[in-house]
Length: 278
Image (tube, rainbow, N blue to C red; front, side, top):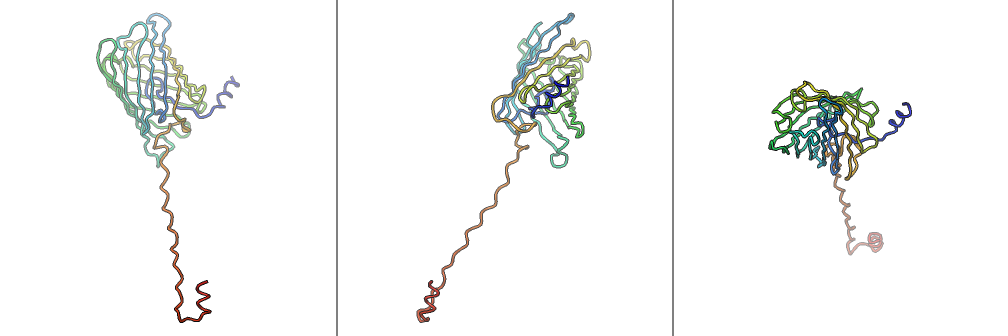
């Protein structure tokens, strides 16, 4: 165990995850980079045995924003809320001058979803605020989300919350997220996130329903990785607000004007004319 912990501690700074487990996080894919993740939700035992996959892709476009493409709930038994969605997420840093150590962010996102089982168009909208506690580096997130019947199995507005606690910085985190309410996302999901390398993410979690009507508990496995583009040296991405442009340089001073020495009058003594002309 000690050897494993020492290996964890040898890590370099890692890219942050784009979702805590299923709840979108305050982290944004760096500009010009790609992120791809596969998620498996699995319950191997009866009653209620299932296996479902969700896959999502993100691309960072800068200005603290990423674009997203997601497929939801493909698997067995066939889910009535199998969807494909496109959308975006923006996370705006706040109070950077006064409280930069708190990493306060306001995050907003929208997914437009199309149900592959005939339930039509719908959406998933969310907004939350987050901050980091300076001493423990715990990130707390709280907000609200809205989901439509084609994805959530009912139209719902509900609170959302999450906690992210680093155990070994840039390597190992404890996670917990919660969607309140009676709907298909209505679970409390604790788990562990591990970075085996800077651009790679593994999550192992367990989902627990808020209510029996929401479904059965099960295991969650995720693997994701960043690729392409320019690697960011910051844990929080490569957005313009984190890297302001260099201040403009002052104009260079003009060269001093050279004034020719006056010529002596013609009737001046030859000795004076010789000195001046030299």
